[in-house]
Image (cartoon, rainbow, N blue to C red; front, side, top):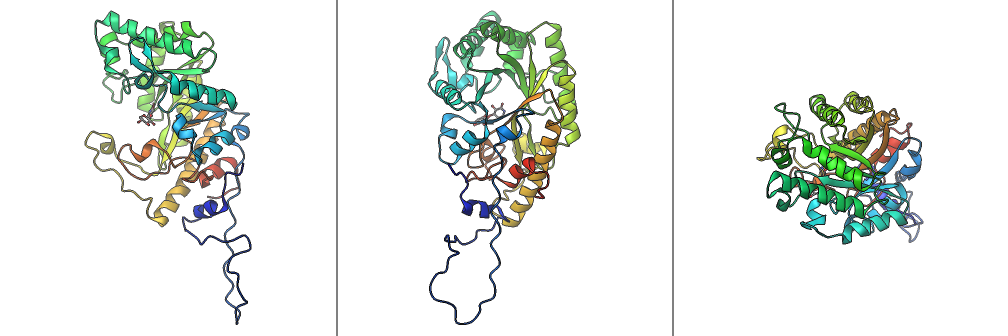
Length: 385
Ligand code: XIL
């Protein structure tokens, strides 16, 4: 199936909307009475990019995140089928989706995703079992012993359900503090169970499926200070003898940050602990927002540029260069076994609502599913975005 309508590709070039041409060049009718000035040749369509799962096969699996509603539509479906050999559920594996009430589960959508993956040659990254967000309040009621039992039961039941079908789990998500006051995020898990909650979740997952690879997943590992806190946690987990196979680096980044050196440092630090690396939620926002934009007040966020063709074209170029720089680092790390973008194409991205409602275009494929300059930049070293 052809995924790349030529008119879509033309839209990529400079962000200009050009007239739709017929197969014969358009116009038709009788010859002009006098020679018209030569019309500029239409820009060549952007060549398709190789299937990313094949292109990067010697280095890592290539994954995309989506729920069934995200991959079933006509824009995203051909893109994920062509490019991905790994899939992460964007929401339907989270406790808020699966964990209706103690011992009661809502498997339908997750089962559908697992069947889709099996039918289409994709491994599944399970995301996520233990998190401070998108987790029902029922987990946190009762005594500490009861909360621990609910966590362990939930992890056991979910991992057992998908035993042999989910290759790896983000067992614990975002456990690292964003400030220097502590290594550990001050979540309800920490408040009720102390740092041992991570060990409890990991041990329950290993017991339920000894073959699944177990990860701690977090954002901001490209920030050396946050990375240091995460590594404190990793050291602690390993000292407890808890089963941990790898670290997931979300890599929700932007066109201006981070530097390749900081990403290289994060991957190296994890490998030095004897662990595997996954890049789990990669997207490159068009905006470089100040910290205040992520505070509850959401102040100082950059203004939407998606309606301005000149600014958008410049941002997409910067984005292509950032994607290329990141992938050049990724390819240097044998410990990096999987790279997943958080979404399939720009028609659907969580960044259109986070940190504020705003147009954003953070992925490798555009709103119509055609490859963007970034997709070309990571597959063709000679391409100048
Ligand atoms: C996001 C989803 O993309 C959204 O649809 C949902 O509303 C909120 O969660 N870090 C994570 C992901 O680990 O689970 C988050 O996914 C994005 C940030």
